[in-house]
Length: 381
Image 1 (cartoon, rainbow, N blue to C red):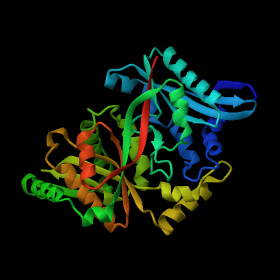
Image 2 (spheres, rainbow, N blue to C red; image 1 turned 90 degrees about the vertical axis):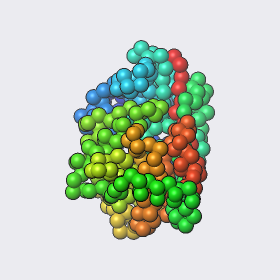
Image 3 (cartoon, rainbow, N blue to C red; image 1 turned 180 degrees about the vertical axis):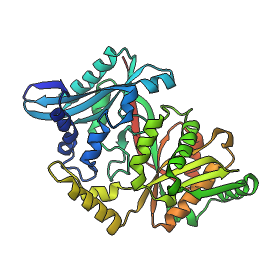
Image 4 (cartoon, rainbow, N blue to C red; image 1 turned 135 degrees about the vertical axis):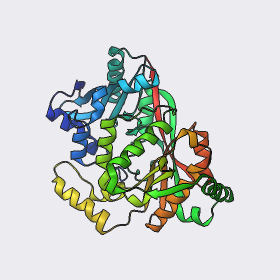
C-alpha cells in the first residue's frame, strides 16, 4: 500500500480538495445528501462565517500518493470554553475511505492540535458547534438525513473508538407521524393546553416575515436563555445569529415558525424547517456541475414538484420563568396542526439530549419514537 501522508490545508486548491472529498466517500451511498458547494466554501471561510471570530481552526488531508483518502478539522472554540468553564478542543469534518491507518492518523493529528493548544480533552465531531451540525450517526443509517443533520457510514464509529474516544453524550432524533398524533391526541396534552390557554393569556402566532430582523432578535433572546443550562450549549453571538438568520430566511415556511406571547413579550419560540434534504438529494449537486444547474434542479423538486413530506423541529424553547406551565405542549400542538394543513406528513424532533428527561418525556407523550442517534465523543489528553 502506498505510504500515508498527513498534510495541513494551506492553499485554496487544498481547501477545495477538502470540500470535494466527501463525494468520493459517498459515491456508492444512496442516502448521503450533498451540500451546495458555494455553501461549503462560505461556511469554511473566515471572511464569511462569524464563528471564526472566536475560534482557531486547522484542516488536514490524508494522502496516499496523489490520492486523498481522508480529511479532518481540529479547532479551538474560545467562546465554548469560556461559557462552559472547560478547556477542550474539537474535531470535525472527519471523512475517510475504508482505511483504518488513515483514520487513526487523522485522529492523532487532531489530538496533537488539541495538545499543542493546551487543551486537556477533545470533543467531536462538530462542524463547528452545537449550533451547527454535531454528532456522529451511530444508528439509523438506512434513510436520508433531515435538514442540517449529519450523516456518516457505520464504520466511522469503529474508527473513532479505536482512536481512544469514548461516548460523551447521545443526541436523539424522534420521528412523529403528524396525522396519527392529531387523531389520537393524548388526553393529558389536551388538558394541559386548555389549562395554559385559559390561565396564562397567551397569544400563539406565526413569524412575521415583514418584521424579520426584530423577530430574529426575539428568537435570540429566548434561544440563549432557554438552552443555556444544556450540556454542550454555547450562546450565539450577534453576528452568528444574523448570519444564521440570513441563511435560513429563504428556506423558512412561516406557517411552521411560531412565537408565543404573553402581554406583548415573546416567551416561547418553535422553529421548524422544511426538510430541504429531500429536494437537495434529488438535485444532487456535485463538483464539476455548474451550481446554477443544481439550484434549478433544487428549485424544481422543491417549489414545482413539491412533495416535501418531512419537517424538522430545529429549536423549541421557553423562557426559564415560564417552564413547566405547558407552553411547550401548546407549541407542539400548534406546530403539528399548521404543518398538517401545509401537507407535511412527518416531523423529526432533533436533536434532544439523552439526559433531557423533561423534553424526552414530552416528545414521547405526543407519540414520538427515537429512530436515530448521533453521538458526541470525548477523549482525555
